[in-house]
Image 1 (cartoon, helix red, strand yellow):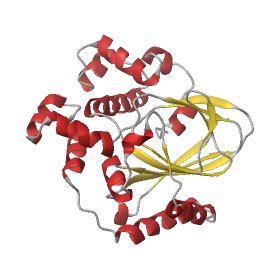
Image 2 (cartoon, rainbow, N blue to C red; image 1 turned 45 degrees about the vertical axis):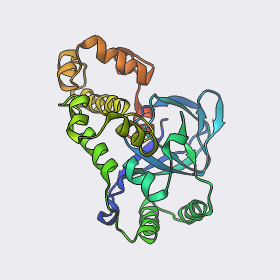
Image 3 (spheres, rainbow, N blue to C red; image 1 turned 90 degrees about the horizontal axis):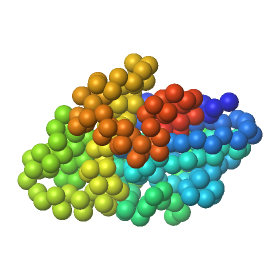
Length: 266
């Protein structure tokens, strides 16, 4: 049986940081090994009871509390014991600014949150008995830290603009419209997003097209090339395989129940 995933609404007081909350429950001892597809968002992840294992490149237990920034490629996870997971999905530039995180330090994987601030939050969340209780607890934590206020900066604007425009406008044109050097954008993205603008565009495209294919129930390469602004079908297939490790034909013809939950695309 695949894990169960649910999405939850965000209190408007912290919607400038959190895009959605997710909860994942796995109640079996059966071992499942499958992928999660990276997104353009960053996530703060809290594990309770058991913990999944990351197979990247060798099997290792995930921390109780960590941040996953946007990744260049899919990761592989092993589920081999019951667990509960609570996830706050955030805009990476805001997350890195509010919590003083350098997302470049995540490398290929994640940043373990070990300081007493997050340890205390994890303990408070672990005592909650419902998703609603954890959402309220996390919301209070953010409001206590920030007063509910955040002033966006140029890097937030660059990120949001690229995400909004990249399906219809070439990246080079978007960056030119910023009237700053590409090197400046690259440097800011490295620390505040964890990936380059080019990789961000690839992730936005892949996740948008995944949703499109899910909605249609089939792959129409002509539509995909047009909707994703790809040069041709070959470029789309190469991009998809580089990120997921599988061709679209193979990926969408297998059971994706676990992949959807782990990827926040349920």
